[in-house]
Length: 183
Image (cartoon, rainbow, N blue to C red; front, side, top):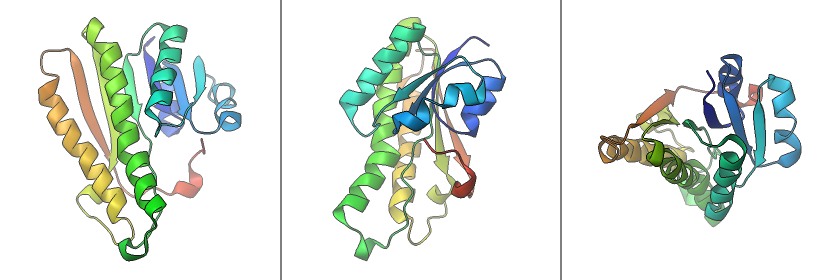
């Protein structure tokens, strides 16, 4: 495939690279994200970006459009996954979990729709979690954010009817974060 995908660094990016996709890889840390294209052997653009900043997300999508011309697929795989008890949560823990697990995805979805609508085609994929159905203590805010993302996707299916843009949720089970690549 020669499609262009905006995706966070993950095993998903590796799998897409192996299938010939051109990738725009979003991540927080420039020094880490810039090493990824050589590591996965793909035609890839490393885009350091704070996905919780809407202006930075707009700029990142503009950079991808400038480099590749378009975006065919968005894979939302960002999340803030820090365990805490609600009663003991700091304001920052609450805000960063919602921003990193829900708002960041919404900013990316909004920009992807803007890019995809004129071409009347595209796929928006968001990674969510089984915690939506089985919320666990210490991860309740994360589960709520992922449930919010699932609700948005349900509405998007109807909102985007007839536009040629498809949406999909990918629900994961437990992930061993110690073995995933950092970005």
